[in-house]
Image: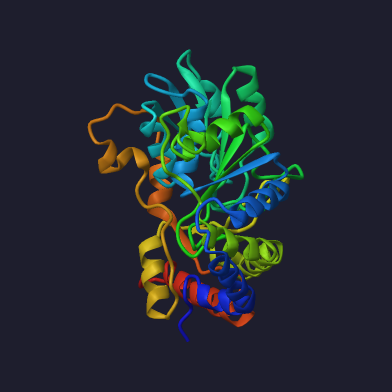
Amino acid sequence: MRVPFLDLARTHDTIRAELDAAWHRVLDRSRYILGEEVEAFETEFAAYCGAEHAIGVANGLDALHLILRAHGIGHGDEVLVPSNTFIATWLAVSQVGAIPVAIEPDPDTYNMDPALAERAITSRTKALVPVHLYGQAADMTVLRALARRNGLLCVEDAAQAHGATFDGTRAGSLGDAAAFSFYPGKNLGALGDGGAITTSDPTMARRMRELANYGSSEKYVHRQQGVNSRLDELQAAVLRVKLRHLDAWNARRATIARLYHDALAPTGLALPQVDPRADAVWHLYVIRTDHRDALAAGLKRRGIDTQIHYPIAPADAEAYAGISVRGSSELGRRLGREILSLPIGPHMSDDEVRQVAAACLEVAETFHSPAA
């Protein structure tokens, strides 16, 4: 039996009637941009995150870019970013003309190391952008305190952390502002691209909302040179449905992670470690091994789909070739050679989890056999 990496069709089948009703509600109103569904979703999502404001935008990259731009981050400024993340975190910094400064992760949680972040601060540093990688919130208690001591903007890249908490506070209200992606494969995913910004700063919320809508909050009155980055009504309606199920889906992911952890303990594979202060939502279940490629190939032969998040450190991307980038990415590069994401999703069955674990055990045994 093949085990897909993520089966969105099975997830959607369980809520098809709700999705159909939401879809037709938008069609019946025939208003597709900045209507009642977006307004309602923004209110509901802000409340869910514990923030005062949410602004729906076109995607997660735009969310990060708009936060930095609204706060005046620009040419010559430095922004601390993880060495191991999807390149969107870095691109947002580059888009406003600032310089990404690579900060290596904590080797256990893979999130930004606060001690290394503190050492990297210079007179040009204006912001830090920790990523809640794989669904586990970064150490925001220390990172936000660090930002405050140094007068820095603290931005959460929460694209993988819908519903995650740290010290009991949800992602989206742990920093000065947060950026979310609703890419279909996320824990809270649309049926296309989408994103949101959360913040409790009313002045910045108003500025970011204007920037995302051509620099306007009143038709044909443009106070800023903005962009077109808006969450549309159809996606907002879908997200409103899915938000009601998010906690249950996250709980199922956590159960799957526990099953993996128990079953894979004998393998010698490096398993995910969670900060005891964090409640992870397990967007990904990522293991590490020196034999990553052999493990992935062995699992593929046994019908198990896997992925690598992320094989190339942003500092090594062709997009940054010839550009001077501060900071170290050595551990980020090593992770890119060793990490492998196993299948996980809210409607993955226990039998499928056991099949994946058994295949991992079988393949891992070959790494230590005389013929290996």
